[in-house]
Image (tube, rainbow, N blue to C red; front, side):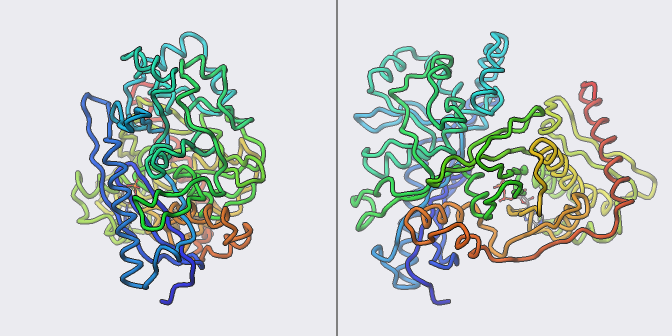
Length: 506
Ligand code: ADP
């Protein structure tokens, strides 16, 4: 392949790895590099990472990709138009402005250490205000209580933050600050919308929320839009320096990369869990059933919003079939095993290993396998596991449709488990809409590159970006509507049972 110049790079800083990817001017992927990151679990439920390792691993992959471009295609720094950044969301970093050294490990989004703070705030009656201002739920997952916890541990740190000696941010902010040698302290609206500190309507830090969580404004970054030049990577790090022009949290970048540009357009990422986002246009949709209202992006045309729902266990259920049940040797084998039977013969699996997310929000629910008979075999179980992923996604999709009121033209899919043709066909049959899997499933990284491409004027319109998304396969719903309704009823009964087992009244 001969690349079309210039090239865009994406820094994709994820929960378990840092990656850099290169795309050419037609959106073709040219090179990639990945380095894993160590997570530490100092106490049950705590999750930390080393901010220094986050930065160094990210920089290493950037340099590695630049070397690949040079070696394979003779593409040098002057042919790289710019860089987009996308990142694990909600994770916090706090550092010393003068020395640039982190003062505490990064507290990762998964970390539950602030569950008690959330309970305290809920009991004090703050939840409704928080929901109304941020579109989020009061949960340890989001950034604000993580900072609050740090300041409760070390009140001196808060004082220093008030005096401007301590800076803070999410992972995007930390990376950019380091990449610009401390010149640029920013975050974009999509990342800021995950902190519990940003007013969803104004796209600015909210004084009432800052006071509620006790967060000094002086330590927070400036909120910028998701596309447009905002800084240059320091030439001491990268030859020639590189312009940064795109920035969004990982799920929002994927929504952009899937070209979900008008209200109702929806993507689902099938990874360990599932992340579904629906574009809702210029107005946020506030959910009454635990979906999150969030900023999709601002690319200079005002804030665009999304509705977000997640399924905790999806690909992890396939891993469970592999690792705990030992029915398959590797995840891709699940299709072959499940295809040996035409249906699950009434077997249901509810993989509520860690409770159930939207729309149930039942942390006590526990998984089950039910409907088994003397004839149930491993293929039925494998098939029921795949179906459970499609059913859980449909639970979120149906809720989104109901709460947002938009019709959903198709479901755009990506993530590791979207490779399963059988799962994608089940999703189309269960959701009764086409399931559209692009040829290039690196949509998160592509989304960040596309934001940079838009910000630099290389890809001057959304229709140009939509045109770069290459169609892979569209799975259309089969004619199984009777069966489908029965399947849904059986699934819902199984979910009710999983909740009863966990002690909840479903
Ligand atoms: P994450 O970013 O959450 O780590 P990925 O997008 O890398 O997730 O997807 C990993 C998940 O995809 C794993 O849980 C695995 O079970 C599943 N997976 C990977 N390949 C396949 C496949 N060919 N068929 C079905 N599932 C798969």
